[in-house]
Image 1 (cartoon, rainbow, N blue to C red):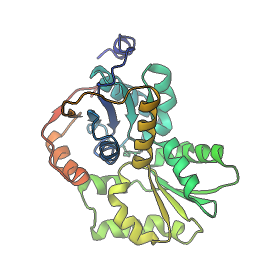
Image 2 (image 1 turned 90 degrees about the vertical axis):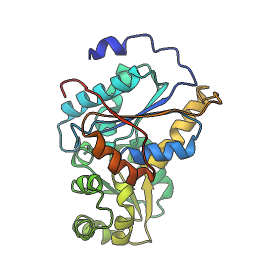
Image 3 (image 1 turned 180 degrees about the horizontal axis):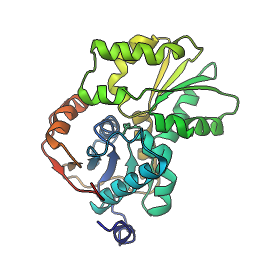
Image 4 (image 1 turned 30 degrees about the vertical axis):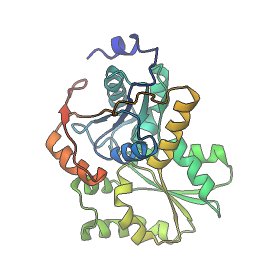
Length: 282
Ligand code: DGL
């Protein structure tokens, strides 16, 4: 696919009845899909999971930018009116780049999640758990400190949470043990608010909460981004008006059957169809 050709084509006039495009490196962005579906139940949604190239969280910034560009180009080619980057890693490393490349409204998960965390904290000490790439980018620290200076922010990469969530090991002894190991330092810190800074993590929230305790406020960036996209569509007159039933489409770059199986865990319902597509050099 020639990405520049599609980016520069005629998608500038946006139709409120067009779908919202959502993409992630895999199945994790379905936590964002679910939140948007609940917040905006009349909207048509298109979801792309780049399952052939997951995980993004261990890759270099240049590779993450390229993958994100190819995902955004694909969802744009489906005629969407806005794009949600339902992946913290791609939001942290590629959101500004994508905004410079497309004329569509584009929302990532970092800013909405950061705003919510700053609203919730009482003692000014916020924890962030995320992929290595997101933690390494410092994107959450920058976004939160831009909202309020003087916050104390403790970040921890939890890379094994992604395969555990993809495996569907939501309440498995191995997941509990991994959580104990990753979260020990955060648990003994003064953190009163914890950002689940990876779209896979909300599905592991019961184990994370058991490990960290119930005195902590949790921030699920999916819920925060759903509010953000609703506001953005309202401001731009892009809320769907069509009274026909909404449409939903699911695309992956590999292993459609596996995606469908794990997606049921994330969405709590079966998917009608999942189509495999080819992006860039996949
Ligand atoms: N869903 C991605 C995120 O939110 C994590 C998975 C990955 O590493 O690709 O960062």
